[in-house]
Length: 173
Image 1 (cartoon, rainbow, N blue to C red):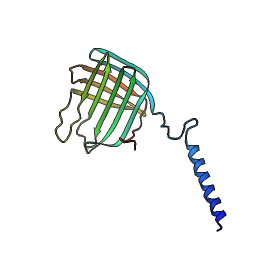
Image 2 (cartoon, rainbow, N blue to C red):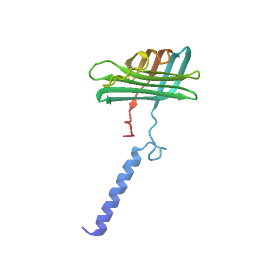
Image 3 (cartoon, rainbow, N blue to C red):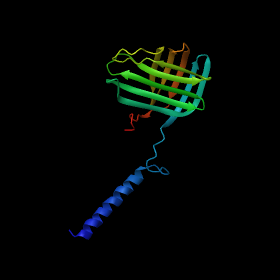
Image 4 (cartoon, helix red, strand yellow):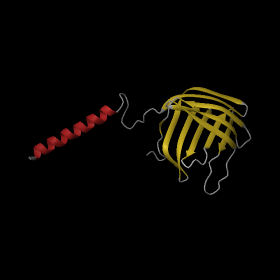
């Protein structure tokens, strides 16, 4: 094969690769821009006597093969922020069936309420107490919260995700 033929084949292959990559990128999205991970979310909580209501777009992710302190577990995460208000829920379901665990932060009414029931092998102390249950519905699901935060505030209600996107591993991989 002549040099000019080799260069022509290489250029043709590079053009084909670039064309396929461009075709796979959603229209109007620049290279390197992350996909929109927002889904429909409805939050109806009472946190320390303050109502927290939200209906709109927020982030809901699921990792079916995650780990928490070297323990295989599914992970669901909900993140919603709006001005000075926010809800962040990370929910773990260990593969061993040892019981669901969660970490919940609710900021509303100028106060932040924190609950962390994640158990570590080193005997880490839970912060706050209570339960979060999870019920699937189609591609989404509802978290029902009945808990007491570190500062003694009662948090009750529901967080509903219309669907779940794939989780991105810590460090961006």
